[in-house]
Length: 188
Image 1 (cartoon, rainbow, N blue to C red):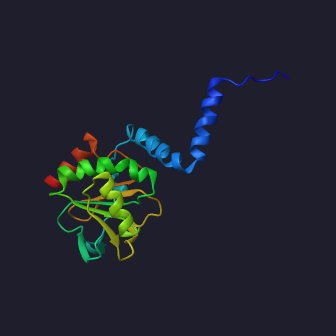
Image 2: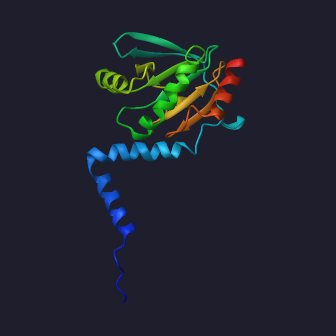
Image 3: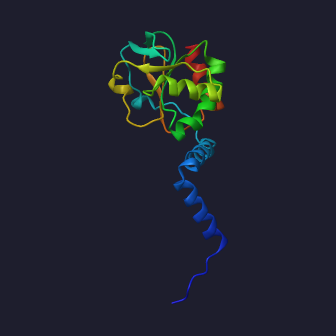
């Protein structure tokens, strides 16, 4: 049997695997890989048969400052809901695109970013990244159509409570294709 030589691509693969094992380098590499993936994927509207209608409801939440409040979902305003966490590489990768979208649509779309983390951890993350996103801690179980075990999971709900977009995993929310979907929903 012929012995295989160790070449440069083997060395690069070994270094990559070692970097993924080291906790301090694993998360930045995972974020970078998710950011790269996002270059090829932007959100799309669900087919009509896959769209589900939510009964309009009040989402009981707490602000990061501990103030209990409720947010109207499916009641005459387009809503963007994101389930995420600060420790989640795909969540971190898509946050800049959500912030850009919020900067442009925050007045006409109800943005609801939900996490179950400690508010101090979330505040520190938002401050470090200079994000101004509206983040809340849920105080009720999500309705079945919004219940998902994986994060990030994001939903766009139209003014009548119909789930138009559902995306799991990192995606580019600032993509022109998605902005057109949002513009159409706002205009309706």
